[in-house]
Image (cartoon, rainbow, N blue to C red):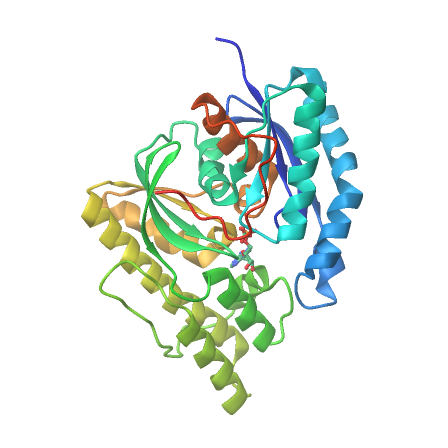
Length: 330
Ligand code: KG4
């Protein structure tokens, strides 16, 4: 069978990334141009500045992706840009660029849901992984438990009712004075602490989450007792949120009878969370975690998800628009 090359384009937030992936699983190139140093001084991503920097970077990053993969535009089978969810101006840069390439090269356009990309990061890391399985998606914009029925068929079993877990990490980091991007900094400092602070955990009958209560508790504690040990606070926060993540994931495993679990999204890079989930292997659950560099935003995962859309004939029209609040389709 002929190899299929997809060109992934990712610009939903603060990384401009372009990748070439073969048959959905083999990364030929994955160029990531991060804007973190640009947004650092503002304490978070400034949407307008993100869009402008995507425009400045996109052609250069694409050229480099082709060079590293050692291919030409003509060798690509499908152009697969992210079209949501994300910052609308940022999304429009990668999507418009992808549409222009599709039109000029006469290659199919395949819009990719960024959340499906986070799931697909596991297909690149673990060649043997195939649906069905449960995926716990934990990122800056999403927290959900998904039954992956097939490569392009999903059933959302539970989701956050307020903040995404990554937002809570970033907020905790800001409150304790660690700055942006917060998640990796909380991860690092937590290693020096003891989980000796009791923080509130929100439970629901179903598989939904809520992280606003714990976020507020950390803010209040830091305000009322400013001498609280920051490392202890970070590890206590990680412990509390992880307990809820594990509890709901176990409910999903019991409900579906599936014994295969994959993590996905930026927060799945967290070392405490990864370790706690890997412990579930003692209970007979196969746990997959994406390669660390594929946890946060990158175009290889988008090209992989794009491949599965393409072979399942989910081709987009050239009038495809950016959808900032795009959801996983049930
Ligand atoms: O997946 P991602 O790059 O963007 C979205 O698609 O939302 O996730 C970004 C989020 C940020 O909130 C960041 O703080 C968090 O992932 N993050 C982490 C770690 N690395 C990134 N959170 C906890 N521990 C980490 N090591």
